[in-house]
Length: 156
Length: 300
Image 1 (tube, helix red, strand yellow):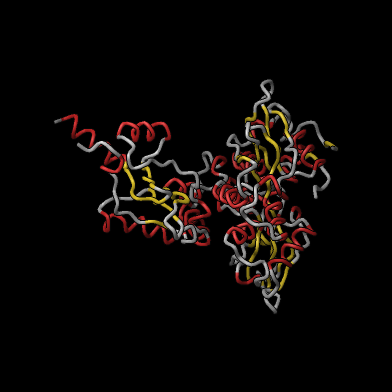
Image 2: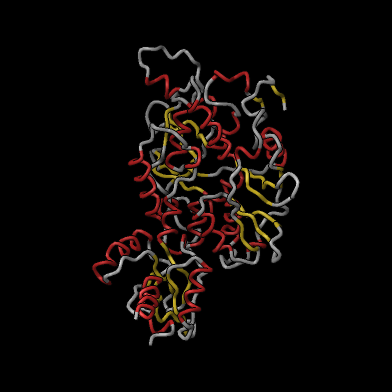
């Protein structure tokens, strides 16, 4: 039976460098489905030595796209949303992954058991956990894979 | 503060109405590099620094980050090297006028907000948020330019503020070949937030803001490089005679802090209008509520 993070982690994952333009990262998100058969919503950021330096998630990108003053828009009906989206898209072109990634990333070791992985994901509100061994990322555990694994065992 | 009339737009508003509830803060031991990441991601001009017990100890603004870049401080240095202490506070129930006056006399662009009784940190108040709030009032107002312009058969008899009345009329610009160090020297000496970059014919080619400088610092760009290699363009402009409400709307919608102001030809830049300038007007965007305008000397 699969019982550890290493048992259920994916080792086929793309990584980003902090110097990668966000616009290139966005393309990688878009291409992930055809390449890995999985829609990615977060990618690992590591340096040239494969050391983990952060994670770029969909949320980081959305946070950057969100207009700063949106709380005063209220019931305004005369908004030209297409123009607003284009302006946000044009601004992101000068931004690199390191500028908006989340640098403090929760990780697990390869020997962490599945219930510890589950607990970490719930407590830290994360859906993916890099598996780190000797400071190097060796895989990622996705919440969906953890869920499928647990369901499989339970329904046996 | 000379108050022209007791019936004020701002008079009945408290800090609670305009502040942001999200407080962007970092431990003072964290790096400037991380600080820039947070400033960029959350689109704020400054962050609060706290000690290891979570107690607020200082503020790091984009101006402080620019100072570190200019001084050649490694971007891995802790925020405590460049923070300004102590942070200044106001209370949730303070009137907006009082808070604005405190900002003006202390020469700061933001205050942190504590609960009325608890003393706990509950928010942050900055100039652009006050403009946002005023814009919201103007937008809903029956005299709103946007409402009256839809009823085209009606004459718009309301006298409105135009950009000329509110803008800062002097604009410093530099040539495309000047270095980032020169940009930083001028921004620092004149306390500007951004610099216009013009070509040899005086034509505006781009802008370098403190945000651009913070990004270049983080990206390890040598501050000796020429302005044109890092400037952002095209320059966002508005006409000197355009209505303030429209200009503010443009800034609020597309997240830009300032518009360069042109007269006649779009290349003839005669001023700059920032959200901070608009906040200093302290009333809505037309004379319909001019009686409520609070006259305050310019904040430098």
